[in-house]
Structures are given as C-alpha cells and as structure tokens.
Image (cartoon, rainbow, N blue to C red):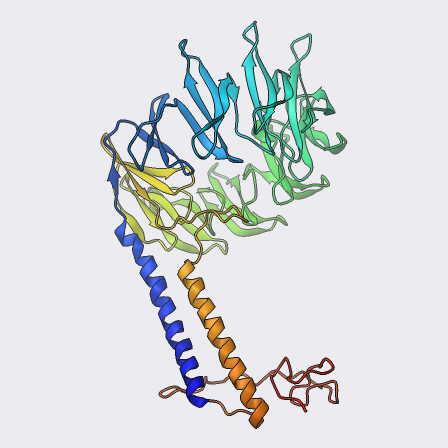
Amino acid sequence: MKRLVCMVLTLLLVLSLSSPALAAEEADATDEIKITWLSVPGEPSNYIDELGWLELSNGFDYTYMDLATGAMQEYDYVDSFSEGLARVGKGDADWNMKLGYINTSGEVVIPLQYDFAVNFSEGLAWVGKRDADWNMKYGYINTVGEVVVPLEYDDASDFSDGMAMVGKRDADGNWKYGYINTSGEVVIPLQYGNSGDFSDGLTWTVKNGKYGYINTSGEIVVPFEYDCNHFTFYAAVNFSEGLARVSKYDANGNMKYGYINTSGEVVVPLEYNDAAVNFSEGLAFVGKRDADGNWKYGYINTSGEVVIPLQYDFAVNFSEGLACVRKRDADGNRKSGYINTSGEIVIPLQYDEASVFSEGLAWVAESWKHGFINTDGDVVVPLEYYDAGYLGSSRYCWVNKGTSYGIFENPYYTEPDSETDSGHSGPSPVIFVVIGLIIVATAVAAVILMKQKASRGKAPVTVLPGESPAPNAPPAFKPAGAASGPNFCPNCGAKLEPGVKFCPNCGKALK
C-alpha cells in the first residue's frame, strides 16, 4: 500500500513540475512570429474572423481577400459580424451602394437592396431606402429580412435595453426624437431634441438646449440642467459602471466635467477640465490645467477619489490592467509608457508613441520606428517598421515598410469564450489537462489514505526519498472550543450527519 501511495505522490510531483515547462513552451511561441508580406495593393484595415477575410483599403475603396486561398471576394464593403450576420455592399450600375447581409458561411440571407444598413442589435437592424424625393427613410428588419418597423423615420438608432431612438422632422423642419420598442410601438413620444441609447435603464436626451436623463417609461430622472458642447453628443454620454459623465459651464465659460449616478446624484464634482467618457476596470482618467495652462492627468475611482495623482501630460483608460500615460522627459520630449491600476510604472516611459493593449499586444514607436510589445514590456516584433496596428478583433496585426504591408497572427489571441464572449488570452488547455490529472491523482491518494485510517487508525505521513516535510506546515484545522459527542468528530470536532462512517472534514474512521 505504501508503494502505491508513493507512486501516486510521485505522479503528482512529476505533473506539478511538468506544467510550468509546458507553459514556458507556449510562451516561447512569440519567438516564432513570422510576418507575411502582401503581394496585393492596399493597406490592411480589418479582418473578418468568421470568414477569414482580410480587408484592404485603397483610399475610399475596399477589397477583400480570403487569407486561406488568396481569392479576392466580390463585395465592395464587408462589415464585422453581429448576431451571426454581417452587412455587405456592392456598387450598382450607377455606382450607388446597395447593402444586405450574409451569414458566417458567406451566403446572402438578406438581399442587397438597401441604401443604408447597420449591424444587428437585439435581433433587429435599422435599414434605409431613398424615397421619390431622394430623402432617406429608416425602419427595422429582423434576422430573416422581414420588415418589423416600416421605413418611415428620418433618423433611427440601434436597439438597447429593448428601446431604439427614432426621429422625424416636423412641419417647420425641426427634429423631434422619441423611442420605440422592438414591436415598433412608440413608447416615448417624439418630443425631444437629439437623444442617446439606453444604458442601465436610462438615456440622455435634450430639451431647450440642456440635457438630462429619462427612463424607459419616459419619466425624467435627471433634470435638464447640463450643458452641451456645440454638438449634443460631444458632452452627453450613457451610463457605464453605474456612472455617467456630465458637464456644465463655469462662471468663466469653461466646461467642467464630473459624474452622476443613476439617481442623478453628483458622485464626482464637476471640477475637471477633461474626463473619460466611461469608467474602465473601475477607474477613469481625469485632467486639469495647472497654473501655467499645462494639462495634468491622473485617475479616480467610482467614488471620486483620486487614486493616481494628476501628474501625467496625457492619459487614456485602462485596458488589460494597464494604461498608457505620457510625460515630458528632462529634454522636454514627450515619452509614453504604461502604469498598472496601483499607479506603478510597469513599462518605462521611453516610447515616442504607444497604443492601448489589445489581446496582449500594444504597438509602440521609438525614433518613429514601430513594433509590438507584450504586457511584460518585452519586444515581440522589432521596432523597425514605418507604421503598425491591429485588425478587427486583434487576431491579426499589421506592419508597414514603404509601400509594402505585412500581417502576422497575434500569438496571445484566444477564441472568444462562448459564455463570456471575451477574446482575452487565458490559460492554455494543456494546463487544464494537467490540473485535471493532478485532481484525479489527489483523489486516488485521498481514498487510499482514508482506507488506511479506517483499518489502522491514524496513518503515518509518507515522505518521498530526497524530500522533506513542508517547513512551518500549519496544524490541521480544529475549531476553537469544538464540540464533542456522538454528533461531532472526536478528532477535529466537525459536525457529523447521522450514520456516516468517516468524518468529511478530517477523514477519521468513526465507530
């Protein structure tokens, strides 16, 4: 029996030691990045994951190539997929674009007949056709192409929280906006100025030059008291993580920003000259001008507390645990690097340009030569290219030298999880296999030890040759003042169910 226990524990040790090696082997995949240089004209501008098509831009013209076969596709425009369908377009004989939808097999499921179309949202997409007077009229179709809401509106938007903003011009040419539900019923009358999409049960809307927030019943939750910057959408934003950025002019005519909660209460005072549209990973960048008129940026949490001081010349929101920040060096040159959510500089401020991280990679530039780094700051694509960027979901990235463009597959990219719909890199499946084997081996060892306890009482600790018991190992758990008696374990004091033969806490055999 001891020999069997030793074999099991040896298996555990081998698996434990081998799993880091497997992980290290995967990490070395970044050494094998190979750039494929394209022989067709155009700048890579998107990658359609579901079809394996690369979009190439030539000014305002687009072409599409199947990366697997090199075949060029027939469409003049292909959008990314949403709810299993992608918007596609072709120019007709008069060079007017006609739009429809294809599925993930590339089959046309909704004919190319619309003058305007967007991606699907909550099972519906707004589409448009020009009337006899050449005015665009909008309505909504479902995923099989049936018209659910007639094409009668002068403006429209995506569905969000079961509602979509629609608009019409009145007899005087003034815009009036309201909301419909997914059945096309007007649930909030067309009476407001420009409006937004619902988020957290609220949306911003404008009345008499001021904006506030209404709920899905059309009730005013936040009064119309906030100011807009020329264009309504520039200042007014939706709720994110329970907060929305709002703005007002101060006595000197300067726009000041802060945040309110869904009850309309001011959580972060309107004191900043700049502020992020949304919170990300619990933080938002904010900025103020100092006495010399220079911008200084830092970060606040959702309670409005400054958690990273306003010390940077530029900042953006966090992505994948890191945020790109910029500061002037001793020579007055602006240098960018990355900080973590604790404000620690984890990648030095040494780059002339830098992007946010996407799927484990960020492009950076030194002396205006571009390459890519990972979240550890390691250079995985040398900084020797004229330009660089991501494509679509960041499965592929691109680089440029002169008139030539190359692409490579992101080694950190993982397929989106079907439940979370997240494309962020995660542990390798190999690791999960190893963990599973360890769990099985542990269970086998536990059964053997319990049987030994049952037949011999307390089992001795078995130490493999060449090993020592773990130093300072904590004693077995025993609740302070543990009760004893027929319904409690005499060894550890855990409560027992009637009729059990082994303690579920310590494994002791019971009489």
